[in-house]
Image: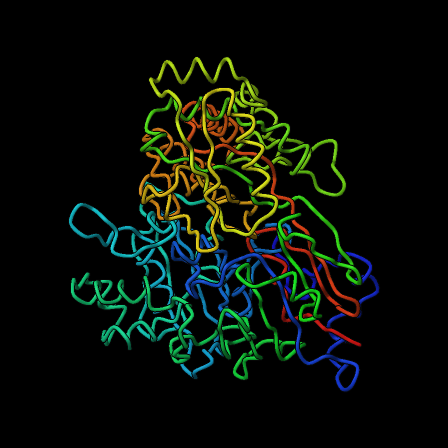
Length: 570
């Protein structure tokens, strides 16, 4: 499904119908073109580093895909699309799986430093899992290690535009296009400067303990975006936009990157307002012209004057459960699942505007790893039937078997969120007869790490605990979020057989093998119950009058996936 960015645009809604082609719109400057466009999205602007646990779980891909580019980006249907502006990647023959990467010769960060294979070495090292503290705790707080952990080495001459990635002889990673993607290839020269490491490549290749520790410390926290002012020298861009300023009240201001070597951004300024902003007020005072939020999540949101549609997203609305505390026993987790009214939740809260007979958004989500429109889906979901609706007698009996009488379950989510508040309310009402007390622990400062800390017992969120845009066709984040030791595994679920299945899934693309492995994985997960899938997260996506080239992206890339093509004319 790879295709050039110029033809990947898909238009949605009446505001987009009849929009001019990109080449024609480029000339529409002057009084008719608005120089700045507001973008409201329910991700959280928390980290520039999309490969970190904080960045991935807050939804940074929906904000920074056109600021930090990579060899591939998440397209509007959840597919990985090649971005040849950044560089090219191709698989080449060899005894071991080998990928050759060539960065664009013209590629340069907005601070004037050329992109180089040093950036790829840092990205690989951070995600490889091979650099650890005592107790095998990773030094780098990476969201996941999928694919990167299978890489034996990255051949790179410091400063070069070329890199060769060689996988271990016994490993193969079929979805290799999920590696070195937009939002996770970070500027190694910044990490080197701040960490005081003269040569990132040699430090990581030799495993110099002190240098690696300093690089990890910076990689983990040095790109965090908070309320304090930014040292913009730490945030150079490799895309058509760069950061001008950020504060929670006035949003993230992106401006055209003067050093961008590809097609220039159609609009010189984009202001991003995230979930922590008053999105209702931003819409009502005409501060935004593109809206991408969870359906019915913002109370009394008036989209009059917008072309709006609610569509099923690639993200999985779900409950991620702890595997300690009240949910320390599998019986307690199963009992809770038996009282969660999944069918009623879908009927009341999970439907998009047009519910299809089959496919994405057709009913409750009965799988964690398989998309509803996959050919594999019907054959892998049999174990979910037991948990379709509330079964109080079964829940009560299962609690008794696990000696977990009258548990209290605290469900956390990023508030305010009207749909998720209603979800918790419906679960509380359904589970009360089973002796399970459900507490709404939603809060404006909620983070999924509170599950790991024991401050909540479940997280209500989309795929990989993201509050907003989430999910992709490849499903790497969904799989990684349940793998032992990964940063996105906030519930700290660990199962050796599940880990082995996921290793096989990414190494063997034979259809029969895939079907067998996915079925086994879902049966195991419905038995162990580390999470409870509810429905494909419905997304409300809207474009203001006069907005051209808007293209809905109900995936982890969000609708901002092509923000550099947006044009607002009035």
